[in-house]
Amino acid sequence: METIHSPPHVEYDDLAPSSHSMEDENPFASMMASFDEAADRSGLDSDLYALLRKPDREIMVSVPTKLDDGTLAIFEGYRVQHNSGLGPYFGPLRIHAGLKVEELRALAGWMTWKCALLNVPFGGSAGGIRMSAKRHSRGELERAVRRYVSNMIGDIGAERDIFAGDLATDEELLAWVMDTVSMHSRTTENASVCGKPLKLGGTYGNAAAVAQGMRILLGPALERSGLPRTGARVIIQGAGRRGGNLAQLLAQDGQIVVGMSDMHGGIYNEKGLDVSAAVRARIDHDDLRRSKGSFEVLSGEEIIERPCDVFMPCAVANVVHLRNARELQCKLIVEGSHAAVSQRSDRILAERGIAVVPDILATGGGTVVNYFEWVQNRAGYSWLPDVVQHRLERFMLEAWDEVAKVAKEQNSRLRMAAHMVAVTRVAAADKLRGLYA
Image 1 (spheres, rainbow, N blue to C red):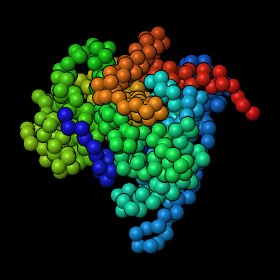
Image 2 (image 1 turned 45 degrees about the horizontal axis):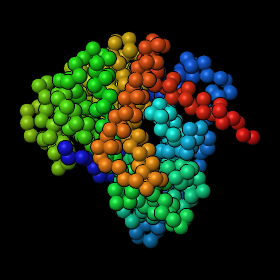
Image 3 (image 1 turned 180 degrees about the vertical axis):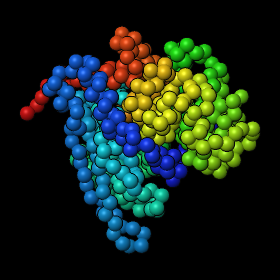
Image 4 (image 1 turned 90 degrees about the horizontal axis):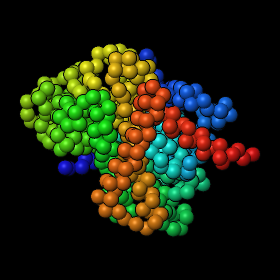
């Protein structure tokens, strides 16, 4: 399989933001609604509830940057640190012209719940720079990133807050982060960043980690929905690093990928697509529709409603919303991006008997493999690919088993079970640590 490394200027999330937030929840509201319901159902103590509802801190810095023409631009940089009850903060660095603090709050919260659910000893954070990675040169981007990191230096690092990749943050950019932290500490701080190049302490399996995690969970999720473990007809939204890798992995496993979509539209064949040709078209032409083979060309909205066994949205928030939740013809959804299924449509799907494997579980492969990278850096190890894969499978399946158990005991949706497990674990850690005043 050819592992896909999407260049930062063609990130699907960057180019195709959700357009349904006016009638569905925005990401922050969706995250908070899940937390509130989980806290209520878990009988969370009112003091702990109040504590977990707010981030620990929010940091804003100016990022003055010399542009190539000699002019000075002042960008804004942010870092939201949600909770450190289970360990140091960990979360993405996002570069985006439309960066919103509310989205960072949601991401930081999701990272807290995701780490707790996967038994990764981190708390959640998220940050970024409000600038366009597409419109600035690499030199301008590097200068902005290094200044941002320098301004954050007292609040980040391997023991405080670890960076990971996100929108427009490739391996080279993460190397700049590591180098800047290292220059300030006068020692190599490779554990301060996850998602680095292998030559700088990165780990095998990082590029396809989210897709691998989704692949691992698909088997038991199909079984739970009364479907065979192989031969499932799958539609994947998104064809970049996450969706493209996932399509190839599932095809290798004997699943039938009947539909794929990218920012331009979708391709569909009820008998199955030539996945290799579709991925190659995405890499060579940035357009699935230029793939070779027999298929029907559809809009991104149309393909979501085509018949399949499994729908796997791997792109943007609110893909499944109030206007289409009753139109889907799938039997199972595995969320490959945060809040792909809105909170209210999740309830509609449950009424229709369509299970949703929630984002904080389904996308956990990336978090787990980033944790592995941190562990290797701190211990001075370098694990072989099969070791990474074996340990990833253990983490993902243990989390799945716990969520499925709670869902059965509480007669709840998988999303609610996952959040109940996560919130309970974080609350227990905070209670044990106590309140320092």
